[in-house]
Length: 520
Image 1 (cartoon, rainbow, N blue to C red):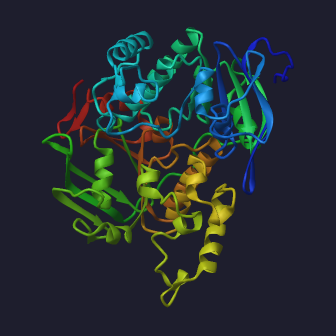
Image 2 (cartoon, rainbow, N blue to C red; image 1 turned 90 degrees about the vertical axis):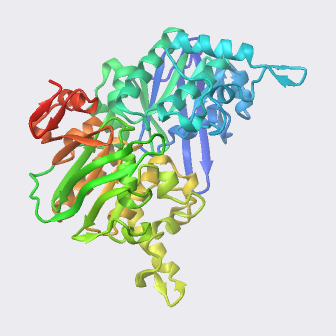
Image 3 (cartoon, rainbow, N blue to C red; image 1 turned 30 degrees about the vertical axis):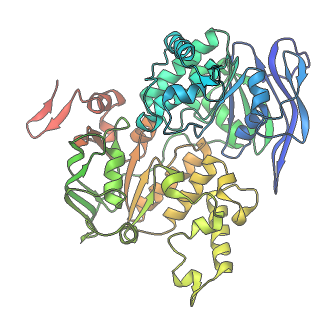
């Protein structure tokens, strides 16, 4: 483990003894971080460890109570993002800062426009962006609107925004949380290309595989404090897990063989129309999930998984087929009525999981405040709500500055996710639909959520999992269904298949039919 050295000449950025406090919590407690020129330096820690806060201090979004920042050995003042930009520091945030109705080009140049006689001149900007796009392998359609492009493409736009401003220090805050495996591989290569060009990168993550693959050094934070800095070549995932969580972490899912019983979810010839084209986004899908099993729908993002779940939960209208839960046909029920039959951990926690400006305790009882436990006549029993929320906070280790009264918007993405998982699993429904349940979570939280889902399975619940994480796809479910272009093209036992075989089905190269496997 390296010692923090006093000399400054070899570091392009130094954050020395940084302390940042919020009501009820010290987010950063005397942290020192040093970044060398041309290196990829990973910042690793649990959800709520203070990683994003520390980077927000560097980018000028927060002002620390104590400490100083140096660039190339000189103390600098960063009061806001404009100061950071002037120092050639750029940041890609976990939740992108893009305007949906603007084009890609307009988003890239916003705030740094070239004007002539009061009018924006885009000719030179287009040329510069095109050259940067080609140089770094960041292919985008400059005239497409943000709302019409994939999340992976939106991230490329954010990177081009930094490069357009000639930034030399690039901060990536959880850059892979919303990407497909293929997009993650592309991003890793882009980061390596940037570092090879002399850019210095700070990379916030808790995905150990990615950190081991791309970083040069790793600094670990735990509960707002500095744990240590190590060379990536001198460490391994087990040691990093221990540093991060403070205890050994079980990286493999522990579970006994499943014992499927009665059918809980029965989907027959189900179709959901597409918003983008004339054919169905989900076409003639039939599947069953039984009590006592976890069934995973795997596939490359954008192949109908989201539309399928929206159709099941009533967020989108279906145009064919049926859905039964515990023998009851729910195909035409309202979202609220369907919600009484299932727990749903949604893909988009901000859009469908939480009301960000409500408190944590209000969010915990969104679907349950009418129940007798939380209501007395026409009045909410606030004491019962608080007691319930405190129990879930403790059980699921949901970290928030002010406990139950914390505004959810102020919580880290991982702790927002843990709050949703806690709420949904505690609703005690026979069917659990879990879409990307561990997205944005650290290894300790992933271990706990996986164990909870296995426990629900063993208690006789039916779990339908949708995941883009191949490690999760291979280790958590009892059966895997691959979806390609809105259809189920293969069913697998995870113990009898490989990632390579699944990949052939995910890309449409292979397909299971009644006659056998096609595409071989």
